Amino acid sequence: MALKPDRNIVDEDISFFAATGWAYGSSRGGIVVPTGNTATGPSGAGMDQAANQVWYGLNPTGARPIGVLMNDVVNIDLTRQTLNPYKSEAQVGDKVTVLRKGYVVTNMIYPTSTIRVGAPAYLGTSGYITPNSGVQTGTWGAANSTLAFEIGKFLSLPDEDGYAKVYVDL
Image (tube, rainbow, N blue to C red):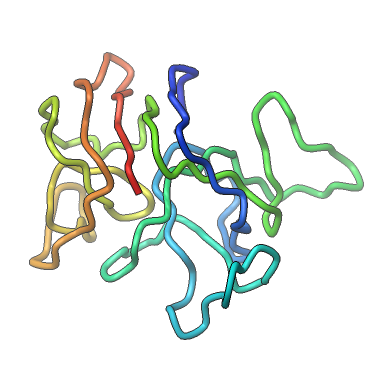
């Protein structure tokens, strides 16, 4: 999954760390949520507190969206390899850039989603963006009765590669 270069960044945040339990090869372009719960989250500004971590929540029921991940998260041996600056890679446990307001062209959209231009966009499972207000669970397209959090709206239909323009306002 990825982002295309067509984007408009109004507000970014660099105060979050890539969660230490994150799977290898997490790509940019999806919606991240905080790890843990509000009782164990950072206090104050939280700029360099280890509890200030984000990831693609597997089941985002109750998880509040933070923004769009703008880095590829990798888990590599830094004594043998270096991070690729051309791909905006970040090591697990490092700071990541999160888009809070603006638009991106991403393919982190549920493959069975029927998108309408101007329709609201919601947080789905594993960082995916969905036009369905019910949180996606288990199989593609299945929804439960828990309402998802709105993250913005769709500004285009998906192209032939599955990329759509999504406006994010968090």
